[in-house]
Image (cartoon, rainbow, N blue to C red; front, top):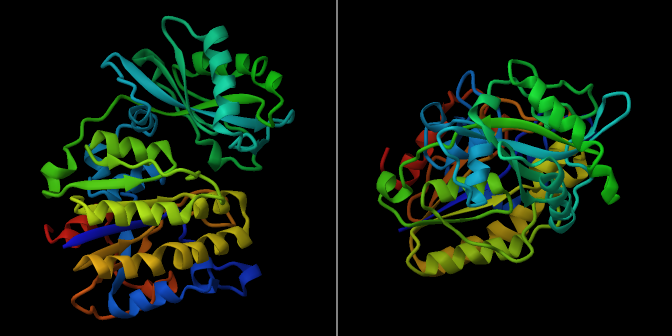
Length: 382
């Protein structure tokens, strides 16, 4: 038996006026989604446990089958693992976004204009050269997403994720460590604009110590792989000993290589990999941008460019089971994440389920299950 987990990041939504009161899942042309739902099982999943922040760190940890209430220590240390950084017990990692904040204090762009990784790396190198010390260090990541490592004494602060502030007044750090963080963020405004990007400073958030997670093989008895363009998901793979497969042309944006991710999954599953996770960020980015057309397009790309050929490829390999769900909702109206339960879809190639409709309205009223329980249901180790 082979297993696939499909994660259209942030695809769940609310009814949208521009779509005639439908959600993107309801408005998009998704014949493969519909066909899989008719032969499978649908439901709702609480991928964000009560009281936890509705971020991709929490949601993707749950999808991989790990209870965030037990394992989650913060977003940044997961991304640090993806960069090969070893966070000592006396240190914390911070996520370091390149952002654009207006003169009036409005968060104009939490992604700083989506610079290329090469452009952003030059900025981070300059920040390390001019602001780095024995205490604090800057480490380049992907596009606008980077890491700062600091002493654990810097970790006592309340920091708002910048994607929660789109087109809103900036909410600056608060708490005992806030002054140190603010000093770094303010100093970055003299460095970042030199590079001609839309970004004009850094934003520190998502801090925490490095988590200790059980390997996926030990937890589920399977050899697993994944592909993603997002350091956060890559870091979860590193922390759980899941093989991280790099796909040329894979980005965290609308232009990602859908076919490459699909083919990476099929190639791995043709070999000795038992389970493969396909993660695509595009639908989440569209939600943050409030871009209705791009969110619908991202879902249609999933259907046409990944799922339809993926099913054919899996049928050629042998029996398979597939789980599909987002890591959280990213409503276009709000331009940020919510903790609302999300729809999930489970399909077994050899056994038809009760069938249903994969959409928010299609699963409305079904009691949600804990998100981290679905991996066990997928692989038969509930």
